[in-house]
Image (cartoon, rainbow, N blue to C red; front, side, top):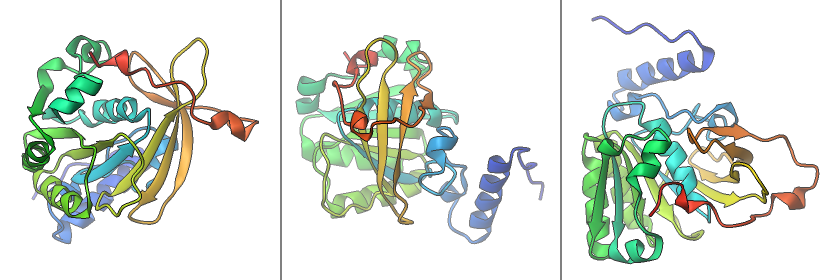
Length: 248
């Protein structure tokens, strides 16, 4: 049996070796896929050299949508659809992804599949179906409420599909969740220039926690780490995130 050569960079070699070990252990093709890379500053936080695919990740906070877009852009390095799921209440409150805004930041609108459910119950079912589909590279689900039972079903679904599941929450939730990681994303004060975010990893399966402050490239959605701030109080959430990047 022929095997693909290992990448030349150290992080790539580690990820590829872990993938082969997982495949030999019989843990499934989805878990053998390399993680989504967001840059060294972020990748080392979860302890998996990036965000694991075939896994559910929970994003909350005022800048969660912008963070989700950056993750989705990075995760679309493999074939498949970007499936964005929301209900009619979400459409009225937050709008929908705006194809020209996505295109301006390097996300092909032709890969976007927008799922609009009439209510939260129908939305949960649609998200589970989307996550289980191998045609979905990334599924973004705007679910205001998702208890342990639902997140368990969603985690099992994404393991079958092999894509990346991003669960967008409007506020922090202290209830248990089956998500692999739990993040809080907030805007930092900024005058002129690109958005700046504080991204906190609040929970991971391996117990990892931490935070990083980044600048968002508005053209590519790349996340660039900021130098440490002298005044910790300056890291408090600032103005609302610039949702107009790709919402309308």
